[in-house]
Amino acid sequence: MTAYLITGAKILGGDAADLLVGNGEILAVGTDLDKPRDAETIDAAGLIALPGLVDLHTHLREPGREDAETVLTGTRSAAAGGFTAVFAMANTDPVADTAGVVEQVWRLGRDAGYADVYPIGAVTVGRKGTQLAELGAMADSAARVRVFSDDGDCVWDAALMRRALEYVKAFDGTIAQHAQEPRLTQGAQMNEGALSGVLGLTGWPSVAEEAIIARDILLNAHVGSKLHICHLSTKGSVEIVRAAKKRGLEVTAEVTPHHLLLTEDLAASYNPVYKVNPPLRTKADVEAVREGLADGTIDIVATDHAPHPVEDKDCEWSAAAFGMTGLETALSVVQHAMVDTGLLTWAEVADRMSYRPAAIGQAADHGRPLEAGAPANLVLVDPSAERTVVPEQTASLSRNTPYVGMTLPGQVVATFLRGTPTVLDGKLTR
Image (cartoon, rainbow, N blue to C red; front, side, top):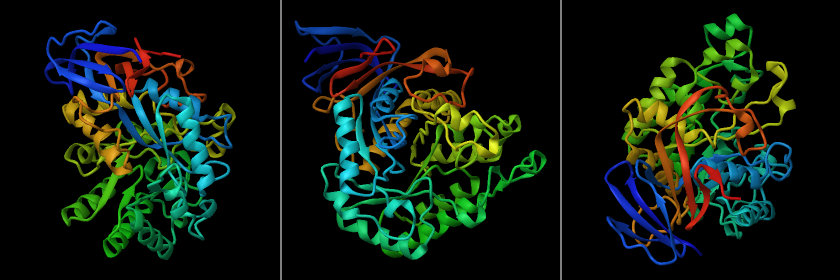
């Protein structure tokens, strides 16, 4: 394995230092490190070194929808975005509700070699919300599943949700809830408000999210388990989670890059690329989730990367699928919305996009400080670069990015997975 001497990188945006990488780990961090005879030098002057990013919420679509994405193409997209680990959601076909399916996804990720893939198991059989899936078998499988979610659907039955929270305590698991009260969102198309009335699109009220979050926090307080809230999107949701954390309850939450930047006004174009679940919200909601991420109420940024083939998006709004791609733009959007606005430092970006998601998902080899002896999972970012988003230039099979034509700051220059570069000079290595 080739060794690399990375010179002059700003560690977490701070002081410049050299990193010597070899044998899958960081061998040394310091200034003016001696270059081993067989090492290659990477000049990282002006670049920021971060631990490899970890995405707790990715849709890789395989098995079943390989026309939208595969584990290979999805992890190539992840590497291009600076991610070294992704957690693959269970809404595949067949659903990842058995040990066999989660092991298949895990092995596909291992064989691809671009990012470590941690399958998320379904909470209920077929994600139908009526019967608990084989949680214990998935936890004991080779994939060692520790996070479970019916994402795309809410575990709406309170009794079933309670049993799931109780069950995963046996192996220190986490239930990740898609907070959407189905009876309040039947036929919903966009955020409920004055604009939905003007556009004639069925509204999706904030309370449909907030009611489930409040209920599940109460259930989790009663059970004493671990609850994670997927793609939180409203001001009210932030307030509920903030109150729960003040009580010392074990609840974590995520926000997507698109909910940090985009608002419901984009729906006025009737362009289905902006149709997403939960929907884009108001400017006040965007400000609230930014504040929540900055003060730690919201623990992490998760992409909810949701690729779709052209035919599922290039149609009328009401018939279009929900979802946006996000792996390759996530860090740039966070820089634009949070770093360049002074709401987060680069060290805090590392916390929200690497340390904490790795801890929640129990990805032991990821989210580690950049220090000697740690696995060499890291990313080099040029914060001064700018790029215009061109869908055809992405590694994902799908093109449904909401940022098409936008100029975003930052560029991933290199990504290392256990010391092996998956991206160099801003390009995938293979």
